[in-house]
Length: 391
Ligand SMILES: *Cc1c(COP(=O)(O)O)cnc(C)c1O
Image 1 (cartoon, helix red, strand yellow):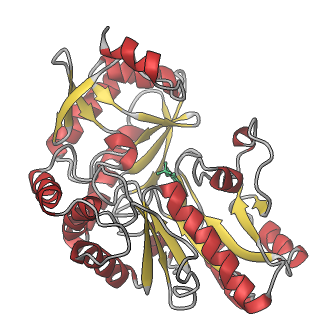
Image 2 (image 1 turned 30 degrees about the vertical axis):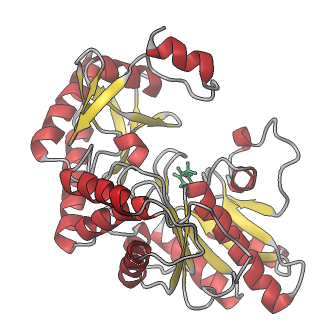
């Protein structure tokens, strides 16, 4: 039986997959089992920050696998403390919790916010305000946190404790905060809504949101699972907006393509979850932390980040000249393309046929190229995209 048939026979049909079996990758190029090559503008959904199989990254990961692959969290390992130190120092947070995915990092943030409020105010202040069109994950709790009705189906009953606010609407937010002043412990948001179509929130809105929450002792949780780790040309997207949320979560790009999630908390709430209150068997896994250490050593560098910003600007400038492109959104190398005359999934398939991997986000085409991509590779990919848009 061939791979595709075997796969479909034994793996649950939760994804619409393309009929391509990828076999290996190098830098910005993936190769399928027939030897056909693809330029990668999707990056495993923003995870392979350094591209495919970066030498330094692969060496660190395999060296760690040969040294100590896992210990459980009953013991200390130096590689996880290295990653935690790099994260807290660069981002200005006090402590981190290690998980294995974005959804888990967000679960930690939600538990932390509720416990923070419980400690200070007792029961009842458990609601989290999230934004319409957000995406926070696939667990039952983070699905409920996700502010899109399409996700609130089939799996009833969903968790309680979420209130949805329209994004970028300060008045509506203030009204909800007033109406629910005794029940809200946190507001959670993405600076740039990724799955929601690469939609950036406004700076004024986010500034007011953070100020008003602070006044009310409501925690701010920034979901940077997609926007974080240099994706937008700053290490955290929140830096573009001049805000410092109490809690920030990271995942996708952090370990360069192996599973990790992190919940980072500031001084006000970093000791709220104490012994036995939260955990994860694999959290802080040394192999994944070894991957993260290489990503952080590379990405936590102003020159590197400025380079990401510049490449993003270059790509956007080229895109806007292309046929059937109505508008371009996003920050750094997190890019959304509003199309006309062709729908995103048709274009995505056409690009694949022509040797370019891209993503969609709602009705838009979405690009998340590896942060290390060269201009030559960018031009190669854009040429394919442009010709797919033309005919
Ligand atoms: C992908 C994503 C998640 C979920 O991450 P998983 O690792 O799939 O659990 C959560 N929030 C945002 C903003 C994401 O883009």
